[in-house]
Image 1 (cartoon, rainbow, N blue to C red):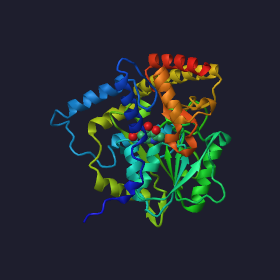
Image 2 (cartoon, rainbow, N blue to C red):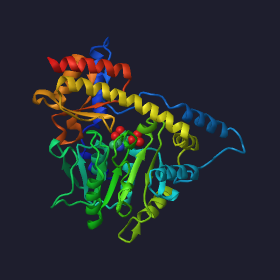
Image 3 (cartoon, rainbow, N blue to C red):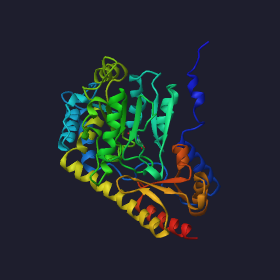
Image 4 (cartoon, rainbow, N blue to C red):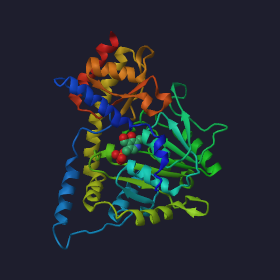
Length: 394
Ligand code: PLP
């Protein structure tokens, strides 16, 4: 008889955001007349920008004509997009060749798929609080997980320390959920540690576009990263592609382990397991990196940043303790009066109809904290901030 992947039995019953959605839906069924202020899931609320929409329309038209039509696309990405993305890095002083850039259908998909490159026996180190998919994807793969907790003491930016033992390191900067961003010196410490022990860093840069201070937006800004890091990025939050789906992954050609080249391995993987990403989407994605597209997506990011400012002003006025909000679209707040994070979730939902995300869902060290997403509707965010301030003042 067939044996299923028994590692699935080790997963929590449901994925965090699915669980929140179910809990919220149940509450709404009992209170159908109430409006909810949704600041839970990190999903965007603004539509795609005009430059992207125009490129998508044009690409649809291409597909209607014999001499402009595209069939299967190259498995690792269309050359026009790989070149555009390598130029995007070049503008930031990072030299990458286009064939070190792989176009993907999003960071989540890639974070799961990339595990194909690594043996099950490797130990995965996950800095926590963390995006829950890191943990779940490794549990599914049957891999041992080393949890690296962080907290206010280290500003939610854990560093390598003596006795730490792992092979695959997840770093997310700017971090979801805490909004913390590693500086150059801190990333150098991780790179030195990974190179010294032959580990590989999976660097999740999904929120790089939100950094406004002088902090690294790519791990490849730091010397030594080319021999130990893979960078996973996405247009979801940069350009509102959450429902459109497009991302990219950088695997330097210098990255080798066990006599194998990881860039070559990923080419082998993609050419076997995918038939490329839709031509239409890749055209839409390329428009994000044009001068006009860049201006427009930054305009949307400014709107989300204004949401963050409004929320932070309310939290400041309430005297709340929080992190993030400046270089990231998340605000990470300490629950008031020692409250548990699910307890605070229920209180906000029941009393002011604001939906956030309990910190406990991002790892045990997230208990006692709460995440607000700033991707919501600006009017809703203003109202939520007002309600939050009143509640915290009581
Ligand atoms: N990585 C992090 C840290 C995220 O927070 C998210 C989504 O919220 C993703 C990856 C997934 O992005 P995508 O929409 O590209 O799958």
